[in-house]
Length: 392
Image (tube, rainbow, N blue to C red; front, top):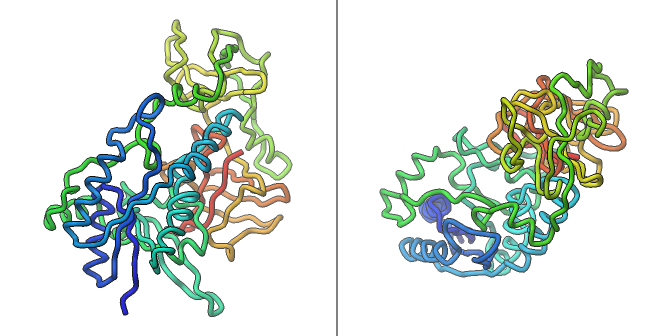
């Protein structure tokens, strides 16, 4: 008896080809389309509203002759992803909704619904790979990068656990994107030439300031310019005593710069942001270096190479550390050299994780630009994603 697989059909080419490949491999397949966001006015505007996506998804299911179902998860999405986003921005942190959507919705609530419908596995169109190995006779699941270096999406799955991986399949992780398009054309799938979706996971493009203003009230405050010759960390040695200073997200003080303008709320800005400051008179563009939501101050620097944009390391609080491979977890006092990614599409960077009682400190071999509180740092050993955590 063949295994029953639920394919999360989104209306895009990747999940369409994933469905085709699974059917070719002999699985008993059914498709499930999820509705995560229904609002079409105001803060969120999608290139393709879910009504368009569901039409393409259903046409694909009919073409492949597989059962098609729809599940409305919009209430869960608002509670677990959107409300979390507001909360994080209010704290002066910049969340990653795509990582949250996968952890909280697609590989949790959606997976539960699929299993209730009789699925043995849930498949998606993510560009990543799963491998099963045995450790002391127990199956252990490895999450590997996708073969296509331009499309690898393992980072977005950095918060998955062993149970979620045990129930997951990634049929296109071994393919390059052009090959996926080619298969879609050869099979006459209506999604073959459809553009990839952009913006928040399953929602679409976002006018972020407008989105945040739904719940976060405007509040005028000072914009303070930090001079380029100011070095918050000076020449600190990379040792355990200096770890808090080396990884601090907030090295500036109001008296270390000069007031050059006003903003409408520090919580509307994020590290490395260039647009939206609306302050002229400088030779080079201004970039956000840090935000202080308590004092409602936005710190900026002139030029994209301002030293304040770079950090030698980052910190992840103990309760925010997640190990995809629990058997690889470090204990306090231990350290290990990983390859680290602090945002999607960022090249992997060499760094040393130093575990202490309060959490994990990661020191990079080369200082990194735009390390942002609230984003996820993911660490790899070779092509395998080992764990991740929210940057403090």
